[in-house]
Image 1 (cartoon, protein in one colour):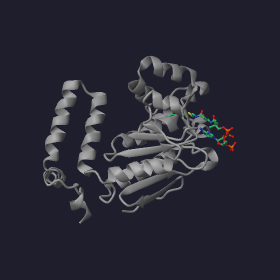
Image 2: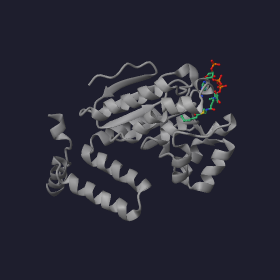
Image 3: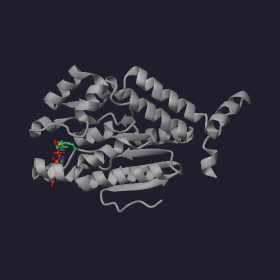
Length: 261
Ligand code: HXC
């Protein structure tokens, strides 16, 4: 499956893992519109690729990302943004079906933090600094920051970070449940987790992600009905037969065999 042209990201497939590295290191991986488009297109390409089960997103150089490109934003007007609709690309990230694991280090600020929050699992280097400095620029997060942070840690706690723009250290992000874990070797941790997930049944991963995302938006009852549909659907997969048969035969299951053929 061929990747679209890339200027600001690097991609590769390692086994069943689709890797995306941000690559605008001279600017701390500040996200201009082209770069966001490239990230999204890389994710979508991996999402469509049957050989890929899980997507890994990491920074490069000194940081994950210092946020949206301020130079590019300086010239923006309400009308130019209405016409360009820059957030349409961001919305496409929410529609990626496969698990996305973010490995972050250095600065994870503004749009960079929003990008990490749009992923499914987040592992961070101990020296990582998270934050929403937008308020200091006279604006606010626009790619889900106020929504995802609030849903994650609650309104009162989120507002303090959003009002002040203070930097949050990695251990605090872990304590608040914003990230999964602080690790001294982010690269090894994300790849080990990706490797584990790539051996899990791919359709189950997909429908688990879908159901967990619904939990954020729906009422408990609606969410549970959605969950049930996904549960039923998995009984149409070879992995369900394999997983249950393997249990009864007291052997480890081998998933995704059909896709490997
Ligand atoms: C454009 C940026 C940038 C950014 C860094 N650079 N962040 N350019 N947009 N967000 C550039 C600098 O201008 C500089 O370019 C080079 O990267 C290195 O940065 P320095 O500031 O010289 O490095 P340092 O002193 O180490 O400070 C690092 C930093 C600081 C703490 C990350 O750069 C910083 O505060 N950046 C801005 C962070 C921010 O406010 N992010 C939120 C953006 S708003 P030159 O050419 O001088 O070498 C946002 C809104 C999202 O994200 C809305 C939805 C998309």
